[in-house]
Structure formats: C-alpha cells, structure tokens
Length: 224
Length: 414
Image 1 (tube, rainbow over the protein chains, first blue to last red):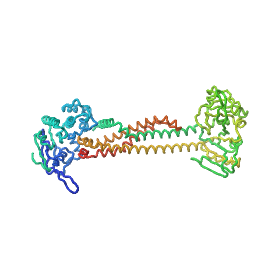
Image 2 (cartoon, rainbow over the protein chains, first blue to last red):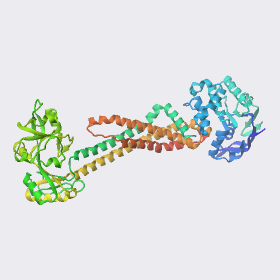
Image 3 (cartoon, each protein chain N blue to C red):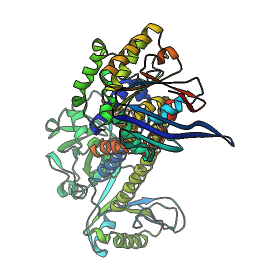
Image 4 (tube, rainbow over the protein chains, first blue to last red):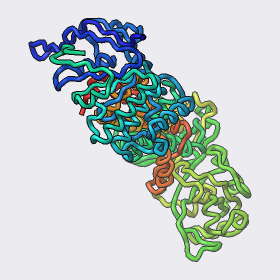
C-alpha cells in the first residue's frame, strides 16, 4: 500500500521564558493511503502540535516529513501554502467558516486559492455540497445552519480540492453526540471511498471509529 | 488567486458591510468633495478676474487725481511696478482735455486717451413708475473702443454730440430693459436724467462686468461735455483712460505721464495704474488662493486616509481568524495582501465618487454665498485619483500586516 505520510524523529519545542518546553520528542509515524487514523491524546500531550506540523501550518525543529513524496521539512512558507492547498483538507473543531460568505462561497475558497475561477469551481463545489446532504442550503449563510450542518460544509470544503489527506481537529468537539455520530459516519463513508483521514481527538469513543489509533503521551508516540 | 476572484470576494465583503464602508469612506467623501469645490472656487476666482478685465486692453492706463498725501511718494503694486503716485501738496487737481492734448503731444506711444467722469443720478422714463438711480458716465467717442464696448442697437457717443453738447445717452443693456422693456424699445426714446430729457441714441450689448468701477449693464453713457455742463458736481473729479499702442511701452509711458502731470499740476496728486499689471496681480492672488485651498483639501485627504487605515487595522484584527482560515486553505500572502488593498481601494473609489457627486450637488448652493464656483471635469478626475492614491497608500500597511500573519497564530486568535 502506498505511503502517504512518513514522519521520522520529529521534534518540536517552544521557548517559554528561559526554559525550553519540548512538546514533541522524536515522533515517528507512517500513514498509508486510504487509512482512517485517529491521533489520541489528553490535553497538553502534543497532539495539536503534531496536527499543525502534519497540516504544514507549523514547522518542526528537527526530523523528516514526507507527504506523498513531497519533502515538507525543507519547504519554505510559500511552498507550505501550496502544499496545504493541494494536499491537505482541513476540518476544524469550530468549523471555521467565513460568516459573510454563503455555503457555496465557503466551499469554493480552496479552488479559488488554487487559481480557478468561480465559474470553473462551481460545478465541483455543488457536487461536494450535495454529497454531504446540503443541496438545499447552497446559498445559505453559516449563521442559518446548525452546528452539524456547518461541520458538513467544512467537510465539503475540505474534500472539494481532492487532497491527499483529510486532517480533522476534534471534528465532533463542538457537536452533540447524535450530530457527532453523523459526522463520524461521513468520515467512514469518505474513508470507504479511499480518502486518507487523520483525526485528532481526546475522546477514545470517537477515536474508535478509526481503523488505527496512535496514542500520544507527553510528546511521544505511546502505542499504535 | 485570479484578480477577478479577489475582486469578487472584495465585492462580497463590501456589500455585506455597506454602512461600515460608508462610515469608513466619510473622510474620502469629504476630501473628494473639498478638492472639487476648492478647484471650482479657484477656477471661478480666475474667471471672475478674467471677466473683470475682459473689456480692458492690457495696455490700458488709468490716471486718477487724488487728494491724499503732502509729500512725494512712489509705490509699486504687483509685478512690473504698476502704480506710481506722486504728490507735493494736498490740493486736488482736476484733469481735463488739455491734459490729454499735452500727453498726446509730448508722450509717444499713446494710441488713444479720453476723459471719464462718473456720477450717480436719478433716471426716469419708459415703463418706470418712479425714478431709479443709475451710474451716469460722461466720456468720449474713443472710450467704446478702448474698453471694447459693443452696441446692441444704435451708436455710441460721437465727436459731434460732444461738440454740440447734445443731451443724448447710450444705455447699458439692463438699464434699457428696466426702463423700456427691451433694447429696441429704448432706442430713439426719451429718458429723463436729473429731470432733463435725453434721447437714447444707442443701447450697449450686455457685458456683465465692471469696467473702470462701473457696472456697464446698469450705466448710462453721455457725452463728456454734456455731463460736465449738466450732471457733474464740483466734487466729481474726472479720470483719464489712455491706451498704449504697444503693451511693452506701458511702464515707460506711465513714468513720462508722471513727470508731465507733475509739471502741469505741480500741486496735484495722481494715481496712475495699468490694467495689465492689475490683471497679473489679481490672477496671482487667485492662484495663491487656489494653492491654499488645494493644500486644505490635501490635508482633508490625509485625515481621511488615516481614517481608512484605522478602520482597516480594526478590520484585520476582527478578521484575524478568517485570514488564518484563508491561509490554512492555501491562499497566498500576495492574494491576501491584494484582497485588503483592493478593499481599501474600493472604499476610496466609493468615497471619491460620492464626494464628487456631493460636490456637484452642493455647487448650485454656492450661488447663495456669492462665491463663484466653476466645476471642471479635471477637478473630478483629480479628486478620484487622489482618493484611489489615498486608499492605496494608507491601505497598504494594514494589508501587509494581514498578509504577514502566521496561519497557526491567526487561527488560534480569539
């Protein structure tokens, strides 16, 4: 099976005053194509930092990171932006939709950032919005949608650019249990369609929906 | 991102925040309106000056007898030493045709010269129910040529009328209309000036300006000899209006006139001024006023620009998470910079257009202030360019700040 993510000995630390706070200590993980992986860990374990590095939103101090053959650990900020646009689909805990834009405009953003016109992007966006069951809400604003619906818009936005990985940060954290289950069902369905999904969570019940769980404790991979 | 799509997102942002955009652009609205208005006032001022002097030949020289001062004095006003006064006692000399003859004989380069005396008298006749007061000007045939007066009907004062001391009159266009209803009705009719009957031999074309301190359209012109005999009081002092054959000789002629008049009237005081220098001085004042007003408008623009910058800084702060999302989705730094910069530009353009429209709406109200304002297309274009320039300059730093945010920090901003 093709390896999508290969991370070797990733270290990340922050300077807090005069003290160096080591958040990730020689973390090495591998994710294969089509896998649904949960990164599980308690608050302060370093899972969010790991997610930021996987998502190319933060840089590591040392180690190697290959994303579908791309050498991420040597990439510059402008290159990281392109990697995020083409290879990563983000799903945030609080959806992070832009309030002024409609569902369609929000979903279009990754394709517009890629250089497509809205006329070119429209067909693919409507298709993805339909795939998450929001075809009646295309021209609605986020404020007119429920939390679960907003998270489905965020999923549509993440998958519209057909990225190498879907990176979900506590995707059910802001939802009630029933809505959370619906979102997880969408993830399973996406996984069954061959999408590679990495989900960050502190909740074991949520993590159990994944094919594989990577536990992070005190900045280290505890078990796989 | 395609430029068209950046503009599309900017348009969505702006249309969703119409009131905020309007408030932000207030400074630019005021700046653009100010710049159009001040340029209009400046142009109006210049046109006023031009109108004031349009009937005067640049080579025209005006000599007045004055009663001021008891010692010799020379003064220069405006470029080219326009005015020279000279005096040796307090007695006021009376200028006459003899002075003109002496000047024409001794001073080369004077093309024409006439006496001009102005008084104010009651006028009655035609459709008037009661007498009205008008400026009465006593002068000679050549005056119409010197100050470029044209006839609507009839003829101007002639040498024969002056020689025969005829009671004839040439009316200004407004005065003719006031008394008789029209120029043609006035022509050949009789009008009473100071209770004496005068035949209207001509009506002047409308001039709509002051010439030698007289509102031509509301004045009546009579032969100088007639005015001297019937209308001028002992306190009316005539002046001489001369015109130089060559504009370049004006200052030499003035100097010679000064010497000659001092010889003829050793006790008199004269003020000699030329229209060209007065014109230059007046235009220079109008230009100075324009520069001053444009400076004020520029300051207004700077204040407006700072307003835009402040609102954009707040906007960047408010939209930090949104910028984080855009960055997470892979929007490039330059695209975010352009998005904020275009937003500043659009706010400025909206402000500029509203400001220019507002200035055109306010322009008619200027009539009530008595200030002449002449709107010009170039002022409107300049105001719009200033507006866009202000938006670009003051919008750049907040836009740069937004574009430089790190995605992770922007996303985690509460």
